[in-house]
Image 1 (tube, rainbow, N blue to C red):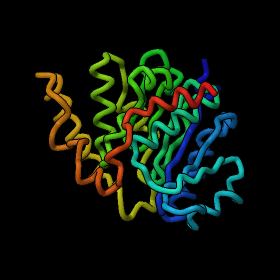
Image 2: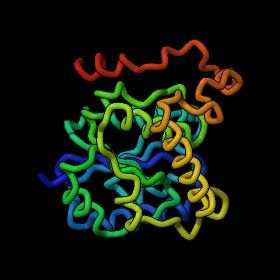
Image 3: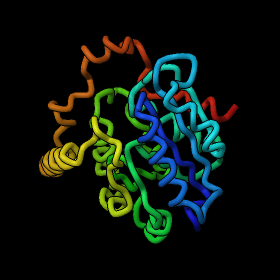
Length: 244
């Protein structure tokens, strides 16, 4: 099986500089020049009924990109659920996401193909691919994760608890921070995140304790700020929508 024949790739944007997004897209499409069949969605999370000005260039310069306006930013976990549903609607078995400040290099598709029967998730913080049916088995991503990093940690906990193999390093050799990321996701941030991840995973493996309180996903103040307190967090409705 060639993963390129059953994969959708995605990017979420939120007012990132135009040059950053352009660098990311140019590198990405160069990396898949052998696999033009992979559909790509760019999803704008900036609040408003129109695409933000910094991504309007994509319509003209990257006509192969499918554009979606989310109207508002609903959080990373909900975004991941959204693109997983898009993959299902496209009848794809794999779903992937790349951050707009990330530069990927050719060879990642072949690397996944080599390990396609070994792992159900290839995740490296800003560049990830997962098996759609595995995410559905785990009841999608928990949309109570509304703060940065919580979604990633929660995903690892879910995979470990279910005994499903995943890789956090396999794609690392094919991505790096882009030259235009002056204001977020620095290398120091990435390194600190992985130190924290190792700490909490080691703690969980030792005593099977609950999700770390320091990364509490039930943050009532945050939920009030987003006016999400009354939302049914588990998006069971997605399966019903897909069947229509």
